[in-house]
Image 1 (cartoon, rainbow, N blue to C red):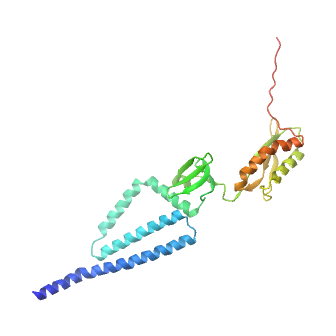
Image 2 (image 1 turned 180 degrees about the vertical axis):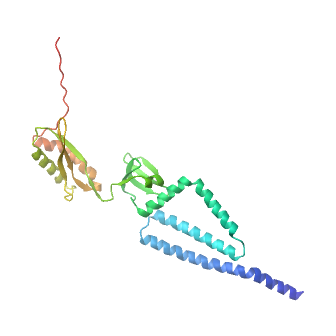
Length: 269
């Protein structure tokens, strides 16, 4: 009876103990490897200056995937069939994917935005009919502070698939202004005065040089473009400076700015 019990215990240990020890060893070694892998991946992301949001998201995805793979391997080591588990996991993933098609599109857009960086927080952009400053880039949506101080929340899927104009990408903007002068004006003299007005402002760049040219011979005026270049942050101060000083500059050289006149004709009966 004693021999039988010892043999039974040995058989049970060989049958269950060895796989259990293998599973424990696999858990310890696998957990250590996952920790090391995450540290290496995090260092690579920091070195390549990935966005913090993208770093956290990718680290979480990789960590979960690695642990799921390790758990499946441990379960297989214990002699438990993993085919059904894998099939159930795949079915659940498919069902979730179908239910969240729109969110997955936004998620994919968010990953690509954070990877390719067409803009960053603080940039002024025009996209999806909205113009404003980027406040926050999440994995599913982007927050834009509009010039009227309203916050627009744009899903990343449509945002990535549409046109994006980044006003801060080059760091330089052209100030778009136009002024109409009388047909009696001395055009070369007028252009010279307007060019001096544009270049005298300390925020106007010398390179590229300002553009000052006649653009249209309109019905009642000759329209002149005045387009200096500035750093992005200096665009509006220069724009307002030009608008404020167009009339004094033209008054000083005797050039009239045309404006609509109404002629009233009365017939005496």
